[in-house]
Length: 309
Image 1 (cartoon, rainbow, N blue to C red):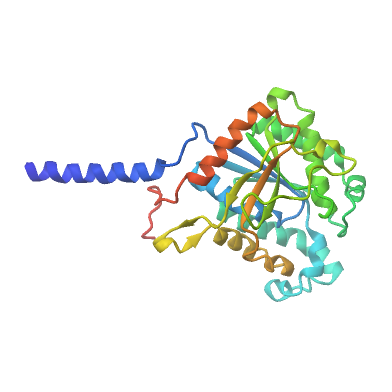
Image 2: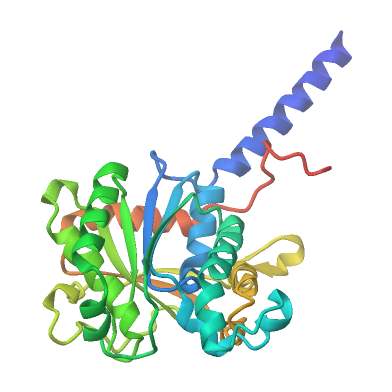
């Protein structure tokens, strides 16, 4: 009997130790919900590490709203020809086949980071240009905002992450961010999620050359506010040999139709999330607590997964 009690005590301690490992650093008392708003079917790699930790380690939900069908990527699809057995770098072929191919690639990467749902807006990916006027004129912007509003009201997200709409970025990136901001601004204040502009830099605390996109005051960042950050170089695993740049590389690797995307492997160390001025400054504590949890919650062995299979 004494031996049985001893075994029971050991098992109990092991269980408690595993539970403590699971909950250490988990400071949130809710399951966070996040919506990413992007332009192309590979822009999701920008958020990869934060999304992975949110879904796998914080029991959160992340969805993606993607504006274009990605057909304009045909110019970079030469290597993809050999994967998909199509001449994807010929414009007439690429524009025909890439929308479905790139959706499959996107969802393969999304499976890695735990994406829950995808909202495809299927606007034409016509050309590369830094001019924001082009997509705002050619896209069905009224319908986009109506659909975004419906999604936001139904899902009640805590956070929305857009791409940084800086001067030097793709016009589609700018347009996707501006449309998201305009939609959120039109919501009642009590229904608005916190919204952030996202970029990747090399070092923690690195400054960026952006405060507002000229002509679009809605895109202004909150003054005097530093970004929320996640360092992909955070170490874990045996002998601390692993880090979260691996997750970013895995997601990039799924976008095989896009040769230039593969050149981003291993580049960029820190995901930065800058709050827009549209946010209520007093509400930012919620975001700070969220990113503290993202940074602190450790990798663990999920008791719901049978690692023997």
